[in-house]
Length: 248
Length: 148
Image 1 (cartoon, rainbow over the protein chains, first blue to last red):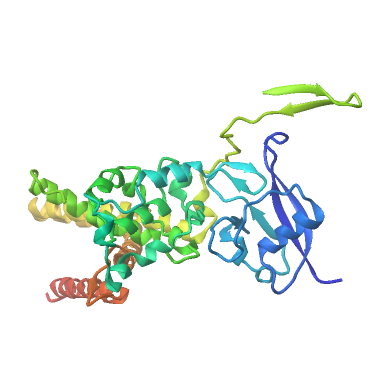
Image 2 (image 1 turned 45 degrees about the horizontal axis):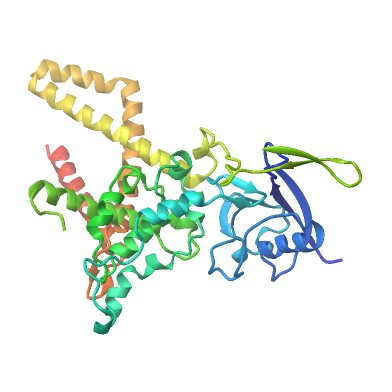
């Protein structure tokens, strides 16, 4: 029989349980298997009621984020062999309410994300006949890193500020706001400034920096937030010095 | 809302409807959340270091105040500095201030995304002038203290 590894999985049924519990499964330890393969093995062969989110299996969709041995990870990119001889503990993403087993409620993030207006805002849209808004490779390069975000929410699970203060906008939403702020085609900076420079926006961040460490796409949300703190401070000084029309 | 129904073979079944959106189970965060992970502990120590930076500032202000008060007052202040508790506090403060300065300088490149010639200036080129300025300031202070 092939080598096995113990998979300890959080189980929680909102209808049945008051608190989540841990259930252990033995799964084959295969060189090419990631944690998500092990979860799918359990669902297909052992217990079909195990619930978890996943889709692409290749680090693009951002659905399969979970805590693996206490660290926020994309389970499709986390190899079982790195945890041999085990056990591997798989828990739902920290800082979010648990809905069932490994599934968390993410409406809070989605609402915050739409609040920061993560889309290109134009003062006046030009007609289609005038063609697309052009951008040079250099202009693309300034925000490209922040555009890599896949909304996997590992950064929210790593952020103690979000855990302690659920009103905090959080790393991904702020990084995505900065992605549009830095886009040469965007004209919505001042609109976003009022939202982002609130206490629950960038100033809620105490720069723990773990969001950047756990990001599977190297987005660096911590960097984005600190850079925006600098911008917001400059805008604040500008509005002090030029109260009538200093705001860009 | 619970609803009890009886199935074909007479078993009682309880159907539970969950509200939408359901609240889910919230894990309470422990007061000691920062102890479990080195990165979190380092962050708390960095935050704590500002208290000891403030202590050094207060001490320096007291020193200036004693200097204004004349030789007697300054001697009293030196007596205060010789207190073993104050010596211990100052040694601890010194290490925390080193930690504060180093972490601050290392974080500076994160906040400053300067672009030159279409490329982002490397982190080291932003951190290095900070360290250089620190060195120059330290040399000047050392010269002031040690020359006489």
